[in-house]
Each structure stands twice: as C-alpha cells, then as structure tokens.
Amino acid sequence: MNNPSPANRNGGDSEASIKRGLWSSRMAFVLAATGSAVGLGNIWKFPYITGENGGGAFVLVYLVCIAAVGLPIMMAEILIGRSGAASPLRSMRLLIEQGGHHPAWRFTAVIGMLAAFLILSFYSVIGGWAVSYIGTAATGELVGKSAEAVGEIFSGLLGSPWLLLGWHTLFMALVMFVVGRGLRGGLERAVTILMPALFVLLLIVVGYAMTTGHFGEGVAFLFQPDFSRLTTAGVLVALGHAFFTLSLGMAVMMAYGSYLSRNVSIAKTSIVVSVMDTGVALLAGLAIFPIVFANGLEPGAGPGLIFQTLPLAFGQMPWGSLIGTLFFVLLTFAAWTSAISLLEPVVEWLEEKKGMSRTRSTVGAGVSCWLLGIASILSLNVWSDVTPLGMFSMFEGKTIFDLLDFVTASIMLPLAGLLVALFAGWVMTRETLQKELAMSSGSFSLWYGVIRYVTPIAVAVVFIYNLF
Image (cartoon, rainbow, N blue to C red; front, side):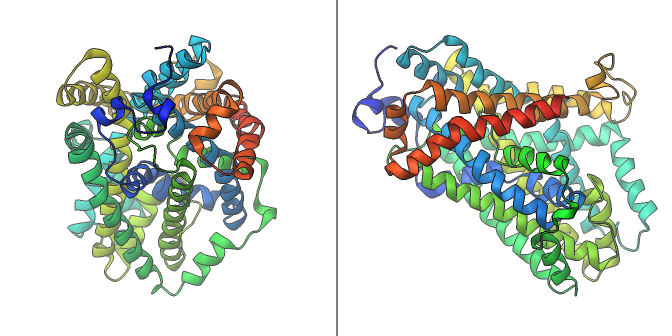
C-alpha cells in the first residue's frame, strides 16, 4: 500500500479500524492502557526498588524519568498503532510503505511482539503465585507464623512443579478467556470492571495502613528526598523501571492504539495513563511501607517483599487475614490486566496474518505461551541448576526463568523502545507527526525535541548499562 490510508487523508476513522472495532470511549482506552501499565511492576517491584534505593530521592528521579522517557515513547507507540489501525507489525509496515522508509524498521514491532510473548510466559507463573496466596491468606495460614514458617510457605510453593503448573494454568486460562472474547466483549468489559475494583481495593489497604500508627513514616520515606542515599545505579534503575512500568517496548500500546478513534487526543490520553499508573505505584508504596514499618520489617527486602515480608506482617496484625486476602486479590487483578495486554499483540497478528478467528488465535497464542511457561516453572525447582547460556559471562548463573526476565527487560524492551523513539523522531516526517498528534505548536515542539534527543540517549544509556 503506497498511498495514505483513508484515515491519513481525511482525518476520520479508517474503514479498516471501523471494521476491526474501536474502543467505545476515551475512558475505555484509558482504563485498558492503565490496566496494561498497572501490573506487578507497580505493586510488587516499585515498592521494593524504592526501598532498596533510598525512598524519596528515588521517587523524584523516577517521576522525571516518566516525563522524559516514558510519556514520549508511549505517545509514539499509540500514534503508530492508530495510524496503521492494524496489528503492530502491519501498522509498522504500512507506515514504512507510505513513507518509503527502509523495511528493516518493521523489526521494531517484531522485537516488541516477541518480548510481550516471552514476558507473558513467565509473568503468568508469577501471576499464579498471586492467585495462590489469596487462598493462603484467606484460610488463615499466615496467622501467627514466624519468618521462617512464612518463608517455608513460599519455598514450598516454588519447590512444587505440579502446584505451580496448576496456578500457572488457571491464570493463563483467565487471560485467554478475556482476550478470546474480543475488544468490546472481552478487553473492554474486563478493564471496566477490574480497574475500578483494583483502585477500590488499593484504597482500602491504604486506609488500613493509615491506622497502623506508622503512616507518617511511610509518607516521609516515599516523599522526603535524601539524595545522599541515591547512587548512579539507583538513577538507572529508576530510568529502567519508568520504561518498563508503562508497558513500553512490548508493542502493547501499538496494539491498543490501533483501536483508538482519531477523535481522541493521543497526548492528553497518554498523560492521563501515565499519571494513573504513577498514582497506583505511589499508592502501593503508601499501602505497603506503613505496614512494613509497623512490624519492624525491612523496606528494602527485595523481590521477597510481597511474598515473604508482607505475608509475615499480615500474619501478625489485627484483621491480617482479611487485609492479606484483599491485597493478593488486588495483586491478581493488576497482574491479570497486564497479562491480557501482553497476549493481545500476538493474537492481533495471528488474526491478520493467518486469517484465524479470534478464538483460534487466542488459543494458539495462549497455549504456546503456557507451554513456554512450563520451562520457567521447572527452572524454579527440577531444573534449578540448568543455565542454558551460562558459558557467557553476561548470562552466568541465570536459570531459564532468570534468562527470560533478563533478555526481555534488559535487552529487548529498551531496544524496541529505542527504535520507536528513533523511528518517530528521525524517520517519520515532522508534518505527519504534528498532524497525527494534533497538539499546539509549543507542546509539539517540546515533545519533538524530547523524542529526538533526550529519550533516545536516556534509553541507550539504560540499554548499555544493562549489558555491561
């Protein structure tokens, strides 16, 4: 296709996008994009990396990184998806053909879609942990347990391949159920229920945290900067997490953007999504740190903060079983909405490329992802000594689970994000971008300068740091 699509010519929604369906409203897209962005990264990872890197100073740097890196790339990805009104790969191909650009740029979408698929394979395993802990908390299994006993619950879960397989299967089935029902009946209906429920649950846990007597300590930890505790490594962690938390480099925002009406402002919508995503991360910190401080626990407890440190606190405090149950329901909802978005780009591509129905595309992609997830499960127990690429120093000691996490988060996502920034800032014409974004000249000039210079340099720094 060498001629601009109808959408590009007249500013209306293209025939292709109308046939594929559109989000029913701007709010539906905002909830879906926020649901994709809000996941384990907000409620699990953000609190513990904040704890590891000194609190308030880290949060401040993180917010700057969201504005300078996350927001510009999100706008570019949504723009690409809406312009093509197709799967991420086809949208990239259409823009390449229309602009006469080098076909190699299509690998921007290929890398993102592959990363989303690989991430979902082990993300579903972690989502299964969250589901399993709902029952663990609800049945009172955590009540009165020592730190050693709580640790044994988690290690017992990780040490059982069959138990992990069951929870992984249940979680993936939930994801496939939603995606298989399509845009309006599946994705949109799910996020309009799950996202408000997630916010309500989070506010309930924050409300409880306010009764612990340590809420002020939690607020100070999050919002009172102490730059003496912030290292260069901490700044780069903030930069990398700002990128990861918004679901960038995974082709997700391209896929969701392909369903977005051309009457909706990409800039305003992206800002709302970024603010809501950041708000959830900060609320998660306000929910978690007062509970941690009230129980004399360590805020920088690392990845075990959610599945070992907090369960210990839930087991010692009044109403702990109820609050713990609500917390893990919240964690499951967050993981579910993100996992849905990770499956969508591949399903879109199968529908277009292979001519498969929505149901068959979902089953094909979902089952393939589920099968790959079994390798991650086994690497936590039976294959714990297997390090496939251990002969290379970069991958030394990394199991299959660790390897998938490292390759996607540290290599594929930054690379895809860098390519998106370069494609939008240096390959697409300024006129095309300005027309698509429909921003005021001053706002557009600011975004254009950032996406051309600031964002690529920042992402390249993270990419090189992760590698070396």
